[in-house]
Amino acid sequence: MDFTCVPIIVVCCYIVGEIYKVLFKNKQEAYKLIPILVAILGGLLGVLIYFTNPEMVLNADNVWVALGVGIVSGASSTGTNQIIKQLFKKGSTSDEQI
Image (cartoon, rainbow, N blue to C red; front, top):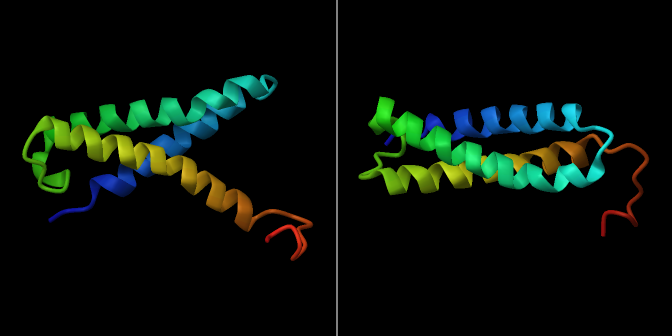
């Protein structure tokens, strides 16, 4: 079983999400669309990888499994963003972390 596509999709979606934030940095309400955007992009990347190299998508039997893997991988880039944001958060105290 090859897990190569999952980190590829996560990194691609994370980068697109960061680019989206730079493009719309003055419009905070546009940030609400980032999880939807990266999930859709992840699904598209999962299907694209499935059609170009099917064994790379966790040995997906059909396009629906590849779509699901892509959507979940794309959506996990939002969680990755939050992990990075919390790790590099400045001025936090122990009371705020509870």
